[in-house]
Amino acid sequence: DNTIPTFDKLLSPLHNRCLWLLAAYSLYRLRYPRVFWDNLYPSVKVAKLFAAGCTRTGAFPAGRNHGKDITVTVPPVLTCGTARPNRGIPADVMTNTKGMSKPQLDALKAQPLDERVKVKVTADEPRALAVGVFDNAQVYFISTMHTAASVINVLKKVYSHLSGVKEWIRIPRLFIADDYNHNMDNVDISDHLAKNYSIRNAGLRIIKWWHAIFFSLVERAKVQAYRIYVWVF
Image (cartoon, rainbow, N blue to C red; front, side):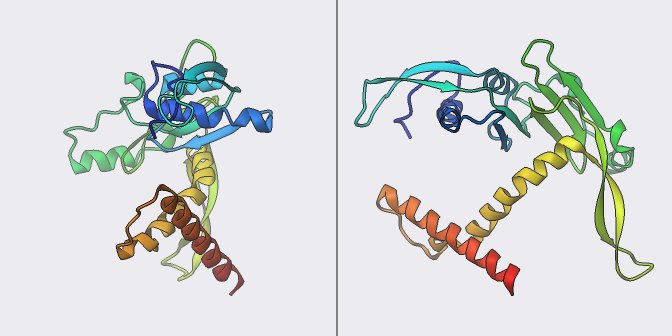
């Protein structure tokens, strides 16, 4: 969409769109707005900018408002998300697994969770927390809503070969990962179902721009109807 104003030339077009969307939070006057996003979006610089809040002015590059200036205000927004290593993740948070053999990776994965976690907090305010943890692969988080990478115990039902039934067991889990998963899971499941059962999988052509919006709404309605059916029946 080339009609979104460029509010900050130091930000990518993607992050300028994020700034445009987060400015809508000021309309709802939420006291502590929180945003969870996947690894396409977070960087340390952007997380700190949104945590501090900002006011930016930009001009519409195209469309019916071409050339007009608009000023938006983003309230302080706390964010948390998985991150790519080239988005400002400190080097001392990274674990270099390149060249490791499978036995070495298995030995690393067998270590206690708190020994596989590396943490770095920015020195200046607003502070951003960068976390690296090795699970099945290396995973990174950037958060301004968490102050530490604590480990918690969660209850999970796991099949027991001894009893032949599922039993509740305690599993150590990184709190920041647990918080992220609980807030993103519904979005990921909805996207997954909508993609698998999309109307557009039948080869339907999208001609008008509003067709994409209309069919997306239909697909979401199908997913919700399916979830209600499973829950009721």
